[in-house]
Image 1 (cartoon, rainbow, N blue to C red):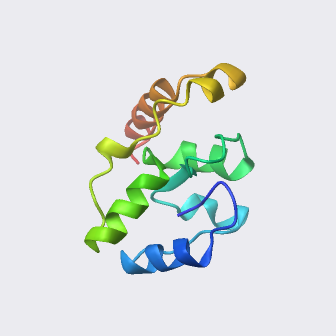
Image 2: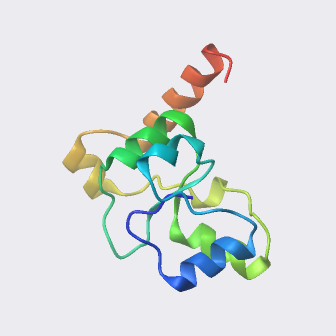
Length: 113
């Protein structure tokens, strides 16, 4: 799980609670299966790690997904936690997260991934 910033000890505990692993380096970003792209306090930032992850996965999530997953001590379905409503970031970077995720899914299907 990559994060928009270095995770706190509490976040690390939540990651461990659901049996996941924090991905901290750009070199490992391609191994991510889920991405916490916003913690609700900091805005979405277009970082190299995020851009690498968007090419690989569709689960671009809010911090709430990790919090709720840790609370239930299991990996929850991501549909209700997709980060699709950061209008400021979408305007600033001139993109649509929903379209980006959909395009990524289609591209991965075409290449067999």
